[in-house]
Structures are given as structure tokens and as C-alpha cells.
Image (cartoon, rainbow, N blue to C red; front, side):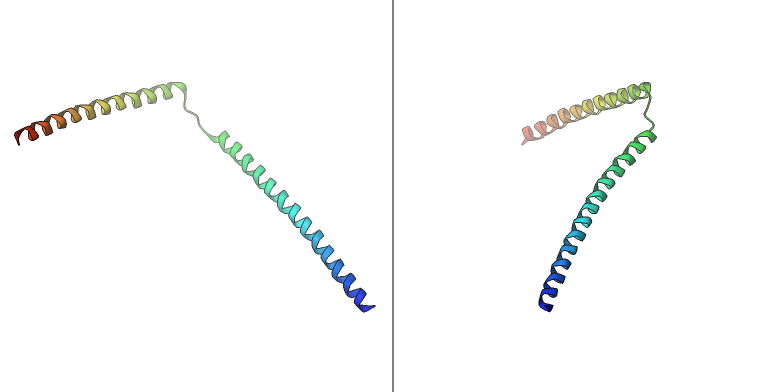
Length: 94
């Protein structure tokens, strides 16, 4: 009889472990979804704190970036032509 009890105890123990494992698995999944939900809630709250610039500021800043980019492009083009001319001049001497 004791052998039967041992088998029953071990099967009860394994069944208990399975139930505990299933509960832990479900709980960890709930925790993951709760964390994801909390993350997006935090993102939404942070977006509410952002101070977006006015349209006039955006236009001024965009204009400044375009003007500076054009000036830099022209400067690089002039330097490229000057260096090309200088290198061609030096190589024609030799």
C-alpha cells in the first residue's frame, strides 16, 4: 500500500507543480502586458509635456538652415575649383 501512496503523492506533487507553473506563467504574461501598457501610458504622458514650437519659429529655423547649407555648398564648390586649378597648375610645371 505504501507504494501506492508514494505514487499518488508524487502524482499529486507533479500536478501541483503543473498548476503552480501554469499560474506563474499566466501571472508573468499578465505582468508583461501590464508593463507594456504602463510603457505606452508613460509615453502618452510625456508627449503631453512637449512644448511644440510655433509655425513662425519653424519657418525661421528652416530658412536659416537652408541659407547656411547653400552658403557652405558654395564655399566648398569654390574651394574645390581653386584646389583643382592649383593642383593642375603644379602638375603642369613638372
